Image 1 (cartoon, rainbow, N blue to C red):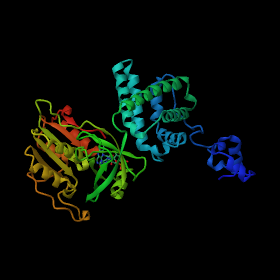
Image 2: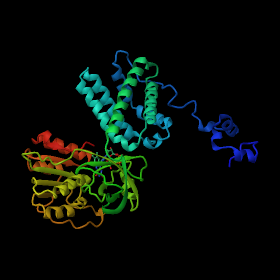
Image 3: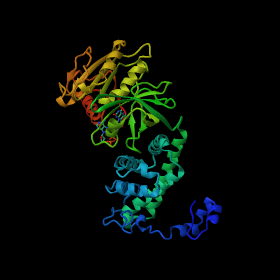
Image 4: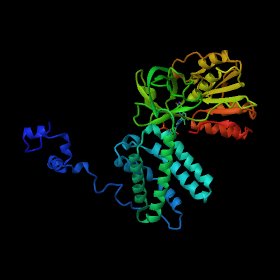
Length: 441
Ligand SMILES: Cc1cc2nc3c(=O)[nH]c(=O)nc-3n(C[C@H](O)[C@H](O)[C@H](O)COP(=O)(O)OP(=O)(O)OC[C@H]3O[C@@H](n4cnc5c(N)ncnc54)[C@H](O)[C@@H]3O)c2cc1C
């Protein structure tokens, strides 16, 4: 029981909790407490005028002026702060270092503003932007955002851009931003409404394997089956870095028992992967969301043979595709190049060799950049023999050393650098770019 100063016990007992909402009671309760340390300071950097606001010329089209404001280097910090103050729920979504997620927002927003400006009335171009926002909306179902969140996000965006523009902010920019944001939120809501299946599914870690120092294989059982296609990836939220969603690719096809396996590598300096690799344990609860991605074996006639190239944990989605292919009677030939830094980093080779033993259409070519394992890597498992001897070099050098593979459908998975180097190297030796598929980082 809470007693208001001066109130007797009987009165306090007969008072309902709702009575606390009466301003006079609340005011009386807090009147003696000094709340000033908890209130915004007058020198709040979001509110104080910037010494050098972004110059906005009235000659610049308003969409491009908004793009210049969004891409200003100070935008992400100011916006993160405005968001955290706008709604308590945003504190988890946009943590103190929100440069990753807000960096993506800046890229998407500046692309959308430029595309609409350059479209000059071409509806197909504008539709492309709206379609992108709908996809985003479908993905955002996992965040369980409400109309209130969209509204607060819009208010924080407006106040940040107004602050950056300083005296250059005018009705023209304000009206344009209002229209852009209305179109954006409508598309986001439409995308979210069109999504199928549960927005998030809980999953329990049931087994953890540590094949190398920096890779962990995590097996989970999901509360309900997540119906992903082989080769797709899932958005994953873990307890190791709260609020940080990352994409991981299941290494085995979806099944009614809800068994899922992920392979995660520790990316030095990354927000999540290091704490996940070090901290994951049996019994932990993860959240899985909407499957995404278009990596697949094209079976349209005439079916082309397949070249798969996997770097490190990029083996996960490709192995998932191979396991799915095992369920088909007839398959195109598949040549898989599986690469890593050291020979002992090829941790999934035993499983691949087992698959190849019953799949005459599958050939595995191990590749490592170094010839031997370093002393600090400790004892490594004995790698199985493959039909093709391990080759030494980068994946791109070894793959292109065999020719252009121009007649194959080419599927890639790996780190952003590996993807960039491999696409560039293959196109340089004559592989048609349209033959190469991978999910963008
Ligand atoms: C479609 C898709 C599927 C993915 N599937 C897997 C998977 O099955 N297993 C897995 O371990 N990871 C996978 N990733 C990468 C994963 O989503 C995270 O990006 C990675 O775990 C790093 O997260 P982080 O929070 O530690 O680092 P962040 O804070 O996100 O990134 C830190 C830096 O590392 C770079 N980076 C991101 N990923 C890599 C990488 N793999 N190698 C080197 N640098 C990188 C980023 O560009 C950034 O500069 C996938 C990514 C995508 C886009």
